[in-house]
Image: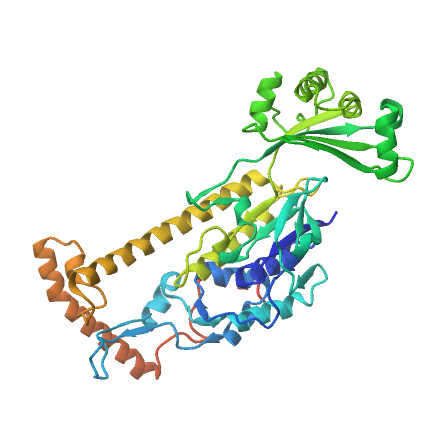
Length: 469
């Protein structure tokens, strides 16, 4: 069975995730939908950490990593504004000795061109039969499909396909994030719809003429009202197989557990035990018929009475957000966190049991991972905001102008003696760093990462096992 995965957004994280899944899960077909044209500007660079580099290795493109990366780019010199001398106040770099001794901390981390990296990912996926990338195709909304999957829609309500799992990698301007994230509170929207769904094995034998007339003419029928929705769909294999699924939707309950409690049925311990064909089936039928009241006509009540089995599920869209679709982190880390999301989500989807026998994803584990991703971004965002507020307060108090160091010592919150010690040591540490930089420069000719620089141990382990080649 082929599992259908749709990825909305062909940025670096979306394409990397597609590359990993298409390479490592041959039974998965990945479709990437991108609203922009293929020639869209991709912005600047990003210095991929261990997570990002691991993701490239698992996507099978690490051997081209340096083709799109800038050698000697993983260091930065800090100059005081208004100072015209050639020497910086300090240099932040990764000394060659520390690279070799502690590659887990000081491994190669050059600036990588986003556009070139995207082209490498696209070229690689063009060679894989289980992957497709479609540009100039905006994803506008997603809705639950009758088969339990998720259907995507584009401009003008155009259907873009049905998928077993949707991954939103559209970033800041995502059109799907409202299904998962509540912007006002910064939290996730876990509330969903509860469905009672089941099967009528033979409508011709069990149902009355009014309902049969509808099914024979249309195949799929739905009854709707304010706060009510029921739909039936033929799904039998061939014209002689009349099996029909029935979905009764409830929007006023918190969870399937609360529904089962109200009906008087114990929550199932497994998917199999959640399929009710015993006395629980009669309890569910009675509850639904009572809930219908006098609102529904007899044909719909007939459908409920004819059910041969039922299940009650929390039905949320099989949708997961990654990167800035969860929370916009802006420049200076957002891309790196998005690549970490892609790497972690891919690893989760590769695990046994990530999809059931019907191709449906294990949403509980995906929701937990999504929550961890959001928490990580919230922490990063809070720290970033705190630094910004501190800078604004400094400017408001002292005005704009040059400073001795890239940060204000007085704002570190150090007690008197520690502040004095910092004032004494910092110039000496800066001088030592500059001297160490010049030593590396004299010995190596130039400072910074190159293709021969030690890489992260986790990446090396993947490459040694055959990944990324």
